[in-house]
Length: 322
Length: 147
Image (cartoon, rainbow over all chains, first blue to last red; front, side, top):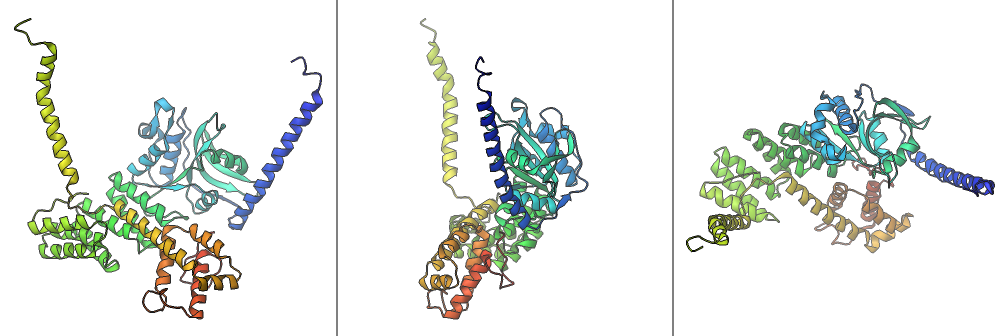
């Protein structure tokens, strides 16, 4: 302390240098990234209309963000109801997996997003994005969920429904560094009849499988239908839709989906195996046996399962389970 | 002391039916876990198979890109084959599968690449690859890589 008055200039100069340095580093990166935004030909500003806002209770940013996203998707579920599903009291927060699980339990697809450009593209497509931010530092984290609903590139801002503030204006550069600390974690909460603007087949299939896992069969069927409208050659979506109809007991629909699949994928044993089970349960024993035989002929890594299907159909007692 | 069973033996006696029960459970579980059950194939299983196909397709496309004739055409058109490979790396599985399918559908006898390709065909092939990777924009049926 006694040296504080002695050499003030050195300190000031040092701080100034550091600030200039940070500023320069910040600027150069900003310019580079904004160029990526410019090249994406996004509108200068955009805001998603009609996203409901719920101010969060203490530590309840997870339930609040999810409630707003579900509200946008057409489900009115107040945050305090979601608290039981996602909030972990000991943590004073909500796990990401809990948010994803709750999304699925309410029949909505949770589609992962971890790319800044895609965030903006989704907003322009009218899809709000739940983002996880670390508002503190890596060694002193303050985790926070917010809902990104718009942006203004002229002013360099992003709009967030965040905490107790609706349409909170945050500089994109600040948002960028708080979001980066969560590894750019984000999810879209979408009704199953809606594809993300930046949808990838390899990501959307697991998102729909998640609906199956949550027992949301009708939502899953709808989800696979949506996937097939974009990727009519997705084997997983055909199989999934067949499994969905089978699970809800609509064997007729399951058969028609799998028959269509067998035309598209005449060499996929899985299709014939599943078709065999459905046909058998519909009492069409001969056709079932034929399908099972076809599956065995196709071989592949699951041929043991196909063989078992054939044996049990021949013995007249299949015990199908999902 | 005489007439009483020591405490340890009491415990053992009481534990006997429990251990029989546990043994039975273990045997039954072990039996069923080896037993392949006839089942509807779950969607997730198919997803894993899809991933395997993606890897196969990727290897296949790489094998096309290392062909001398293909490399020569790439270089002639100012495209770095290593960069092309890097671009293929960044394609998703489904895009690579689509790419491999397109290569397979090329009008050549048998396994398309087992035969010596005509120059025109190689150019078509290369342009197809660059189209899918987003360098060029020639064929309308190609869905472009997002970049």
